[in-house]
Length: 421
Image 1: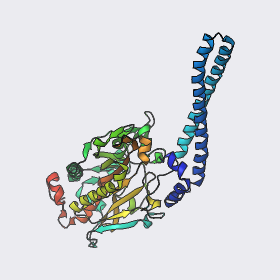
Image 2 (image 1 turned 135 degrees about the vertical axis):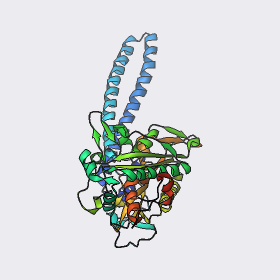
Image 3 (image 1 turned 60 degrees about the vertical axis):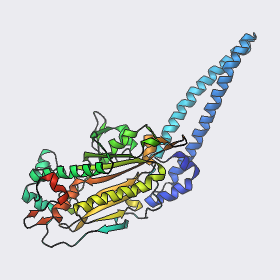
Image 4 (image 1 turned 45 degrees about the vertical axis):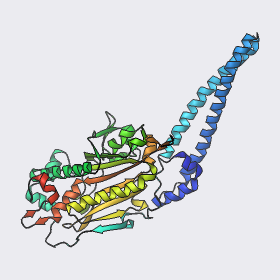
């Protein structure tokens, strides 16, 4: 959530920056400005009321001691009127502050100055590419291979649950576990503290990281308990720091977490959603950092390079995109997407997004830290997929296919116990 002070002091800058996200914020910013004036006026009225009550309380005692009972009683009546006015003013102020929060959550995060203008994924900038993109015409997509090898069963998953909930079998299940362990062990070696989070969160947690009210239609909701299945481990892990004030000595804050992820996003039909390309339930290892504002963009580059190193170790061709304003998430200030090239499909598959949210999430979380001067400041939050498994597995199966079977990347063999599917 954007800070009200930023909108108050720089309304035109906020409006201009949000045009990069193709958001016309002029009307909402004007509403926020008008409401802000009302709230500040009401707070002054309330402060004046309380000051008068404090003065009056002292004066009443002196009047009674001086035998001025009539004046004292008149002042008591005035104090009663002020108390009634105070209660009413507090009620109206709470209503206005709720109205303000409901307006503020409608504004997306401001994009960083490096975010390119654009409306769709076609306008994203390629900032790096590595690996051989040549593909033998005989290579086939992963859904044909996994069926032949009997390692992923889409039909059985549909029978038990529905489309988008596959069952991994035999060496397919072992390869999944190998990827999870490889990603977690590597993250731990790079200083990320491992967390095992819950897979359901309450409404406050979903709101704090920006899933609500923006993405409620994409989350699985359990109305009886008012809980939400997590779309990513980012949500519970970041909420560890909700309503927390960190100390300088707490930095760096680095966490990794494996979880299943649940998303109602659906796709219809076609190659974009076929096989492992798009699922309702999938496994992912997430990395999360909380930083000082001055450090966050250096940390973003560090996280991006870390995810690149995972793909390099797996020997997969990949590229890095800087997302344009129209393709960014609501909460992000700058996002890099990392995509692997899937040779059996001859297309790019997104396997990671690494984002800096600056203080946008922290403002909702009330996540702050005390600097060396004792000043309390909002922290910055960042996260990234490191990595999401389904498309990584699809790319491994397609890119490592041979006449003898699917070769297992060397980095995974100590986890699988075999070198070929």
